Amino acid sequence: MQFLRKLNFGILKKIFFISSLIYFWTYFVYNLGEISFNINFEKNWFEIFLSLLFCIFSIYLNAYSWKNIVIWFGQKSTENNFISFYVITNILKYVPGGIWHFIERFNYIKSISNSQLAFYSTLIEPYFMLCASCILASLGIFASPIYLFLVIPLAFLNRKLIYIVLRFLDVLKGKASETFQLTNSKYELEETINLTSFFPFKAFLYEIGFVFSKFIGFLICFKTVNPDNNPDMIFLLVVFCLSWSIGLIVPTAPSGVGVFEACFLFFIGKSIPQNIILVSLIYFRLISTLGDLLLSVPFLFRKLLKKI
Image (cartoon, rainbow, N blue to C red; front, side, top):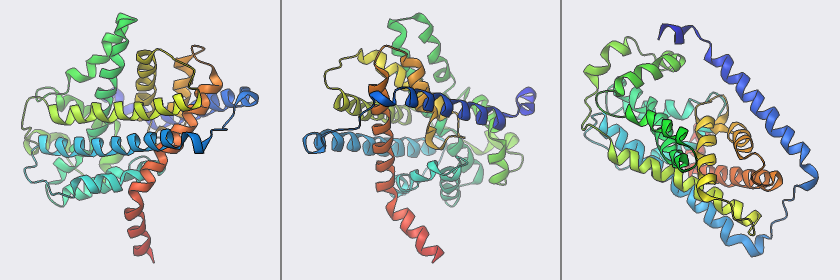
C-alpha cells in the first residue's frame, strides 16, 4: 500500500490515454481510404434502433446493480427513485475528471445514510463492472488456459475479502477521498459497513447483464456494418470485455473514449478487417453516447434551470 501511494497514477493514466488516442488515430488515418460510413438508414433503421435499446437497457441493469450494491453494504431503505437518479446522472461520466457522476451519487446516498457507506458503495461499483467483464472474458479459456486468471478479481468479491479491495481502491482514489472530505475512512470502514450476505449475487448478476447487453449493442452495429462477416462470437465477446475493462480503469478517458477503441483494435489484430472494426466502434460509441444523453435530458435540463 505504501508503494502504491508513492506511485503517480495520474501521470501513468494520462500517458496511457494519450498513447491510446495516438494508436487509434494511426489506425484511422491508415485505413481512411477504406472506411465508409454509408449505412442505409432507411433499410437498417431497426438495427440501429435495436442497438440503442440494448445500450439503454444496459444502463438500467447497471442502475439496478448499483441499488443492490448499496443494499449489500447495509442500507435497509432504498427509495423508488434510486434507479432513475442513477440513470439520469450517467451522462456525467463523460465529463473530464471521471468522478462527477460519483460525486452526485455519493451526495444522494449520503443524504439517506452515513458518508462512509455512501463513499464505499459508490467507490466499489466499477470493481463490480470489472469482475463481471472479466468473468465474461474468461470464456476465452476455451482458446487458452491463461484466461483462467481473469476470475481472480471475483474471488475478492465477498464479505471476508472485500475490505482489502476497498482499501486498495481508497489508495488509488486518494483524490476522491479529498473531494468527498472524508477523514480516517480506512479505520472506520468495518464499523460503518455491515454487509448483508457473503456474496452479492443480485448486484453481480445485474452487472453481468449490463456488460453483455453492451456487447449485444456493439454486435448489432458490427453486423449492420458488415452483414456478411461471421466472426467467432466468443472471441469477439472476449475482445470486447477486455477492451471495455481497460477503458473502465483509465478514468482519464471520459467513459473510456479512445482507450476502449484502441484496445479493441490492438486485441483484434488482423482477425477482422480493420476498416470494418473502426466503423463498428465509431457507430457503437455514437449510439451508446446517444443512449446516455437521451436518458439524462431531465437532469441536464434541471441543472440548466438552476444556473439561469
